[in-house]
Structure formats: C-alpha cells, structure tokens
Image (cartoon, rainbow, N blue to C red; front, top):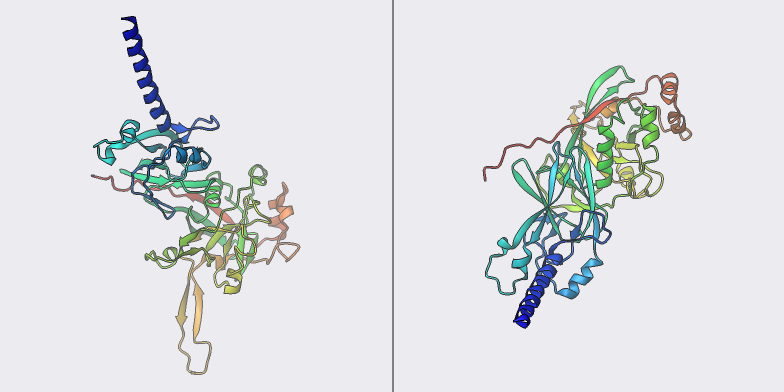
Length: 402
C-alpha cells in the first residue's frame, strides 16, 4: 500500500516538474534580475505585424536554438508620447497549447497577452531586455497597436497610436524682433532619429526653448538655436548628451510630396526645412539644433550628415518650400523672368552671420554665462527669438466599432 502511494506521489511530482519546466520556458527571461523581462523561449507569436520594415517570421525552435537565443537578448526602450498612460503587453504563446505536440487547437488560440508595465504619458519611457522578433501591443483610440523587437540593441519604439509623427507648434519673432508670433509648425518624425526626436520633445515639454535666441542664422545654409535663456535649465541640460542615431532607410518622399505614397526607401538626405541636432563629435548632441534654410544649395545639402555623421534629421517644418512666380519680361533674352519667393518664416530671421570667432555673430561661450542674454540684448539688438514651443497632443480619433 505504501509502495503504491509512493509511486503515485512520485508520478505527481514528475508531472508537476514537467509543467513547471514548460511554464518556466514561457515566462519572460530576466538575465539581470531587473524586473521587466523579455521572453526566454524562441517561439515567435503568430501576430501578422511589421516593425521598421521587418516582416514577422514564424517558427518554433528546438532546445539548442533556445539556448542560443539567451545570448541574443537586446535592450529595447518603449517611449509613450501619447497624452494618456499606456499599458504595454507582451504577446506570447499559451505554454500548454504550444507544448502539445499534436494539439488540434488553432494557432490563434495559443496566443496569450501578458501585461508588462504602465508607461506614463507625454514622454514616459521604460527599458527592458527582450529578444529580436518578440511582439508587444498596446491599446489607444479604440485600436490595438503592435510592435516587434528589432534585431539590434538600443532601439527606441515611440508609441503614437496610428500616427507616424507628432506636431510641435512654435512661434518666433521676425525682421529683427519687430514682428512677433510668427508660426513655426514642426513635424517630429521619431523613426528618422529616435534619440534625437525623443530628446527634442523632452526639451520642448520642459520649456527649454522658450525665449531661445536664433543665434546663428546664415541665409542659404542654416539657422541654429538651442541655448536657453533660463540659466538653471541651461546648466541642467548642457552636458546631457544623447547617443548618435544611425541613418536608416526611410520613405523620404512621403514627407516631401504632400503626403503622396511612395516606395522610395533610402538613407535619408537633408532638405530645406529639416531639423537636426548639432554636435562636435560622436555622441555629443545636447540641446542645440539647426534648421536647413530655404534655397540651400545641393552642395551644402550633401554635406549635412556626411561630414558629421551624427547629424540626423528628426523633424521637418511644414510649409517650408518655395514658390516659383513667373514675371513676363518684354525682353525675351532676359534672365529675370522668374522669381523665387519663399513662404518660410525663416527668411524673416535677422542674420548676424556665423558665430564668433568664425563670423560676426554672438559667442556661444558668452551665451552660456549667467548674463548671456543681457549680452545678446546689448550687443545684438536685432536678434530674433523662438518665443514659445509646445507639443500638440495626439487625439484618439474615432473609436473602433469592431
């Protein structure tokens, strides 16, 4: 009798051990014990989504592949630029159904959704370990949105719902500060430059650029700003640098031809109206940004981002293009029958030339001092300024009835 009971108990223990092994392999793998975790098995979820141009691949790996995957884990950041907190989920296979060798259940029934973390609104971030190809989801505006972990570490996935960009509205002065409240509408496009876009939005939200001088305006080249008039903010962010962003292939024409769809993916090239962080060396981007000016020659456009590869555009100004107006001339041999008129507010910004000591403009070092803006007002009275910038919240839109 005792022998029979012992055999039954041992059998139950073996079954429990088998179930625990299956469950453990379905749980997120946390190599460093840092709380939020990525998945430890190599069974890809069956959701047909695409992320950064990488199509989903479906396969179930054997134990050897699973062990290899532990060494392929990556660090990934999810950033929430939506106006509400977002619950992030991991899309995983049901461990029991996935482990059954001859299950008749459909694949969709083997999917389970695991809550990971709530990400705060307006720039909240969470970073954790995961593996390439693993899938995540969140709800916004009545829809479920999906994201897939990329192949390389350090990626930032910005949560924007159905949008691909986020708008920032600024106003500036013009004509040597004789005009005010001139609109400057910016489309921030995170997948162009994820670190740059995130950092710019953070700086806008803390009011860093409010009142910032357009201290380096060179017509036909660039306009630069990014040294705050607020001394405390200036000192706080001066040495907060961000890592460089790679120049990834994007459908650039989508943002240049009035929203028409194209299939023209290539490494992004600079165009008038694009905005990038400035820097001196790799991984030195902090607060100063430049805008490519209207009518910039192609020879200069080709240099942006190539001589200094850390220059990657993260945004573009709306309505920044030029209009060609034909002026009929009585002289058919005249070359003055066309005139280019730019709609851009940038042409109203007063130019003192390049920064000191290269030109007659203000000294950056002097601007960083506590009385830097008193120096500007005294020595450069016609300087124009960014008056104010704020992020425009993404609206949820129509709720899904599905």
